[in-house]
Image 1 (tube, rainbow, N blue to C red):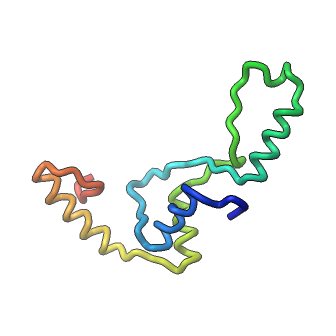
Image 2 (tube, rainbow, N blue to C red):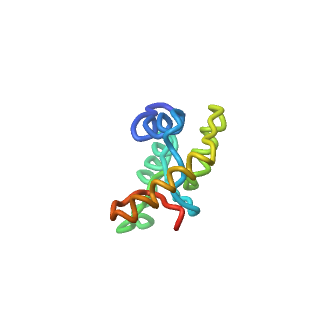
Amino acid sequence: MGPHFAEPYKRFFSIVMNGKYFHMGSRACKNTYGYIENIVYQIDQLVLAPTEEIHKKVFYLGDYEPYDISAWADKIAELCHLKIPFVIFQIAAIFGDIFKKKGIRFPMTSLG
């Protein structure tokens, strides 16, 4: 956590630390965040770059490697000593099966 650590990061940490986050599938999404000092450095490099190297080009600023959100959440939970029992996911999947049969969308089922 660096300077100006705020939304959406604080909310994500809060969700994980309160045990409200769980992985919704086997494929992890990735996200690029931007530590403020990295962003300032990148902007500085663009300002100092020769015009011909940056003219009409698109640049995306952010940390150098995207984060695997599932791995990141696991690490936060590990550091906070949180573990959600698998039986909770099984119960939620059963509710999902029931909702699905009634035509109600639910984020997880045991049927896949």
